[in-house]
Length: 496
Image (tube, rainbow, N blue to C red; front, side):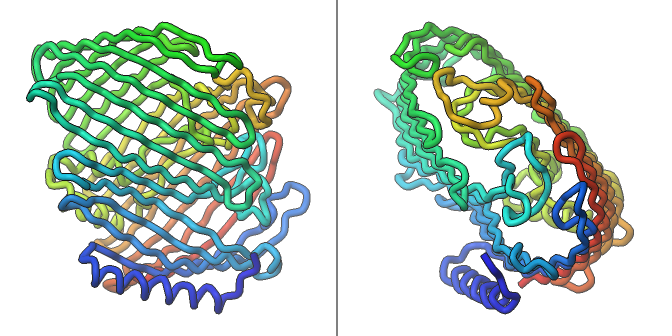
């Protein structure tokens, strides 16, 4: 889409005006901002053979809405960016970014509604060209849109037996239709009593996954669980059941399942859980450990499970999520803590939405083994964030003939590492050093690739609602799609 600067400015004004009117009428907490970024690069096309210098202007209005009290809680963060190329106007584009979540108590103590939506840029293939460019420059990049809706009912029978009925639907699609849509529907009914030392539950579920580029599969499951809670911080459980599906075969087939697990919270600062289960695709497991100290927090997860998502990716906790956990001892109230964390990250020059991710788009059910490590350390003037992940993804659907990365390599292995160090120069300015690496391994003769990046940023609050930042970055890709790029950018941001 061809974009003119005047069009972006008009859209920006409209977005800010609508958001302000909405805030006044609804009583929600709302903030609006507008940023202008000027970026200079020595490799516009991310090419090893034909690097070209370019000036790129990005104009972005942004709206953030939140409600963290009452019966309706949620948040919305949306930005619209006009990307304007100085020499190559055919590469101009409009990009959307959205992160939204809603939790509503529709019927007091009984009816609930959960909803979420997101828009983000995603690599179509982990084996293709990696780099932050619109699809007009990098054909391996697309705008992925996801939406999910999950109503539920909860009640208690005879004052003893809890009952929960829940349905959930989700859809994901790419903006340019170069990647097929994926739709999933899930329904569950659970009855049981877990309020006693010896608890029990019985759950029946049905899951339907439909990949437009692949096929439709149905999974039915019945699972019984018995738990023992000797004290409030310790719980053991065992489970057994049966499931029937057509994932491994064309026709429906029945499988027995069994498993066990434990969860332990020795202190409010430490949480640990471990569970394993025998499923139709083999062994599944889930392990998580988090520990919060006075000025640091560490979180580690290790899991193997089936994924219905069209986006096969590893991911770590965002910078905001890490510091929200770490600040729990300073501010127990989640509403006040949200303000505290955002103010701290702004002063430190850290992006609250930054997280390390990798991935690709798939067209069938997958089995993913994922390990994620996140660490945040808060000092008097310094902050350190370390994130790392490693994933092993393969097809669960052995019948599907859909074409994607997994049809080429069988098993896709990725790992990534990100390190950010922030130093506060003054109460209103800071510098941030960041280094990251994302790598996809070669397999079955198909070459992998890697992308390394290092950057240095300076940011300052030059007025009450105005900030300025400057960033220098060097990136180097190797493997199947090699290139080098150096960029210098400056961003001016004003809040309303």
